[in-house]
Amino acid sequence: MPTYRRPDLVRRAMACLQAQTHSDWICEVRDDCPDSSAQAVVEDIGDPRIRYVANRPQKFMVRNLDDCFLRENPYRADYFYMLEDDNQIRPGFLSLGRDILEQEKLAICQINQVVEHDSRTDHSRIGDVGVFDNLYDQRAYAPAEMRLAIFGAIGISNGAVFWSRRIRNELAVRVDTVPTLEEYLRTCLVAEPVYIAHDKLAIWAQDEQSTTRNNGLNTGWLRRELNLKASLGALQRTVWKNLPPALCETFLAGGVLRIPMDRRLEALRKAGIGAAGVPRDPGAKARLKRLAVRNLGRVHPSVGAVLTRMAA
Image 1 (cartoon, helix red, strand yellow):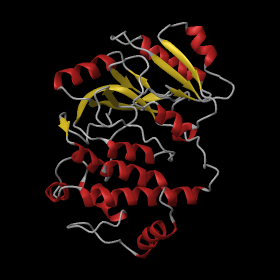
Image 2 (cartoon, rainbow, N blue to C red):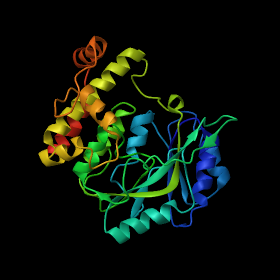
Image 3 (cartoon, rainbow, N blue to C red):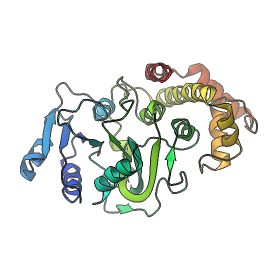
């Protein structure tokens, strides 16, 4: 569990773990707060399954989160999940993840999420629609099929993915990157089938502004957006180029995933990918935006690092 200055949410997330039907777990609370603000909560809860880790030096959000996906396993655990401090899981989450991987003989699955809107406010509410409801069927998806999700949707979701120690490629990016981009990079690191479960057992807090703490965020908003879009576009173009042509044709015809046609074609257009059915820029303004991203945006080095690992 990566955390930073949100001890109230750490307590809530810990309660979710303590309510799990599968009780044989260990949770490392990786506190990135220089004042160790989560330590008192861990000590007050007093559960020996909860281990406190103070980051020294501070790692910042993306690196702290990414370290939760490293292959290192000092506890000889069989299964893994990264529960962010502001997210929640319902009581059957861990049991279902373990059962899916054992029954399907796979090493990765994703369990459906619903969204907590207006988190940490008096108007907080949990939605009914699952993030995967209108994106995936309930089945195992090949790695190439999962990568198609980066065109208009989401592939590997930090709050949904559950994996085993038998995983072929660890899901840690292992290099500094930027918020939002890292989930796209993680999707490209998948090297084996991923089972998608529609059970709505994870709850994702939609409060990006309070979690995007990272080195480099003193960069202006426009510069961050240009860099993010340039990085994503570079990743998408390389992924598309290396996908099996038959799979690309099926995707262009509306198959593989449930992404609406307009969204998948728009993602391809913005990435500058020319393919059958992909529209041209709708006007001068759209063309200028795409050219600005391509010519002024800077592709983050983490993109090249992940593409190199994919090719290895």
